[in-house]
Image 1 (cartoon, rainbow, N blue to C red):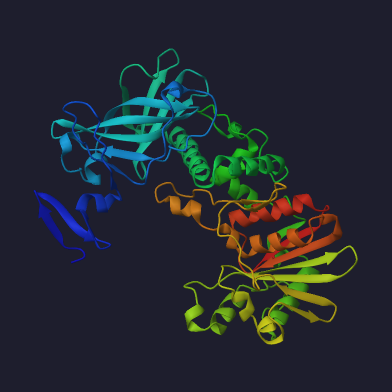
Image 2: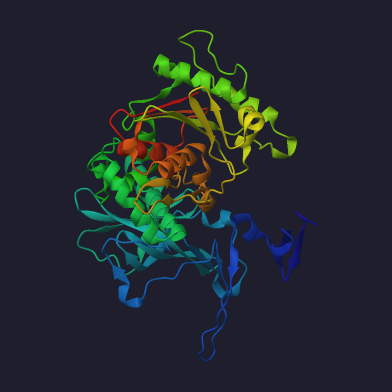
Length: 472
């Protein structure tokens, strides 16, 4: 019956995941919010629809609080059709060029607005998060929000006008200049990311991570005053907040060499590092794997992913080949230790021929000990992990495209990325990094934005020029 529709009281329904749902709601991802009838005479139960269970709103005493803070309700969307009628289709409300709204409550730059959407003579309502940003010259405030995916709206109020009196006149954000619109989208996207992360992991955990971000942001290449990048808006953003929540800032840190003495694809790495990397991969696979044809060629260690994929039993093969990474550690005493990990939580590292045939946990080869850090280990599945000492082991991914963003992306367990697991293992064995002379990290894929922060914070904590990173 999946895909077929059924009319009940002229309202279309269809079977979705073994549950009969209103067809329109399935299309836009809404579910019904349980109705609670107020205990007053003549009260009627009005059904509202949500994209996720909403967070608790602030108390009435905090209704218009403009001091900086968190707004865990910022990402909520609550849709209430008028008069108990069937909900409108998503295509119906994205066609409106002008809408009216009121601000229900506020925390810092974050607000919840109640938007009126006329439909067949009645107003449906949407309660959604919005940002309130002053213009660079202070002459006005912008109230900026979205109804669905990339469907953004903006209202303007002069500096002397109250934001809370009367109706806000919302217009399509496309009516703004491209630069101003894009700046508002950047602030909105960072706001959504910040409050979703705090909602998922808790404010205490996020603030603990923020302390470390504030310490490392500028050394890793973040501007001391990130709002200087804005030409049309005045915002209060610290370097640590930009590194934690803003995608463009995170990408800058990912690309810049700051935080490591070498941060490059294999073709740009020092020759001695390239040769040691090739030797390690040959050892892991117990056969020639990555030796380049000439000194200037890329190592193509990325081919090792497919080689491992072919070695796995069919039941263990992921859709995409898994990243392989190692950290080649030289201690102050001169001993050499190579820590190895494959991304994910399926213990795939043991399938590397070195560990499969010579010892699942660790193998001694000449003067070097190879450690399978995934052997008999259960790493936490989380996107935010900070040690009690404030060392970062995993951070959530930023929002690359607000039009396609889903909160599930924020939950993706970056703690299972191979580079994050390597740093966690080394920090556990060497809480005092002064015992380490150097760490060379090689990975078959370029470190992702989360792993880049983890690696570079580790390099920031160690001795000068102690960390080198290359990828295939």
